[in-house]
Length: 411
Image (cartoon, rainbow, N blue to C red):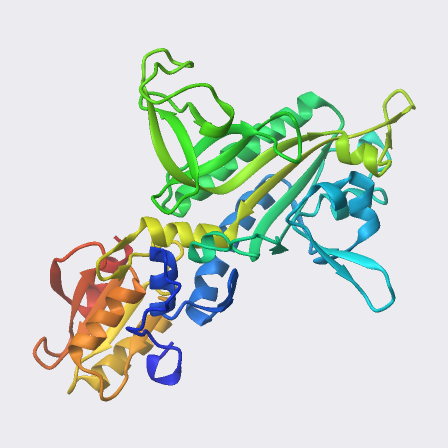
């Protein structure tokens, strides 16, 4: 992509509601724009990052046997009344049409996924089954805040699984937890699988995946020796106490942001919608269900909160909008053009800053703000056949032959 061909370029302006690092840097870097409180437009750079997050999730969900579908955001009220959610969930957006019928905007999709499966689950031979989507959700939050961390409209990956036995469910439940950890690691995040109550979904223990960040809204306790972690809301434990699991570590208090969760739904939704299958004994049975959420847009915000410095964003390579930010200094425009085409031929994602009338200092500042893993510079001073290479995570600059550039970028 050429910066000269897009009007969506980095800006020094800071919006009045930039109350967190992610809201400030994502706007300044040209990734998002706010439509209204809790609702954001994802610009080309932002959409590139979001698509990469989506694809990392897809790979793990597909490997688990999940089948991707897409469900509507607009739901008939009767589905929510069948589960009691219509009256009990205070963040549910409710809409009345001109025909007098009531609808809801989906804040989750159990009320759609469960009745859908009545057509496809008829026998124990049809189980297990897992379906998922990556789609937009709506919640009537009283106060949308923290940029894209807490919105009224946000994107989420939600998967729903159906099982013949609790043993089979528990195996899949654990497999999903492991898949989540792998995927978060690919994003450069170290997450803590945190015990929490099931909330409005279930009275059973669930797991929330937390990333430590000052912009978070959750207080957690984690062990400094083992992987024990618990949400502060549902535990009598306190910081500096002995870890109840390993008995060797000490509990540490921390602020974190939830980026995913897994819930044991039991048979609640299957019973609400009379979803049954014929068991091995020839009798109708209710499947055991689980749901598995992942906030894709929230994850993007958390990553910005976690990976930044005073100059801008530092994207992990796996989800950076481009791997390379190429700057052609004055007098080296043809060199920049040739290198740009060479990198494209080598399948390297490259952003070329070929804007005219922009100082070198401004171009360097834009590169730091956007946060691609590598900054490349060509100039008459460096000479033909060579390029200046700088990692976004380092202040060191090296000049390498263009002939060996690909190997440098792969390290």
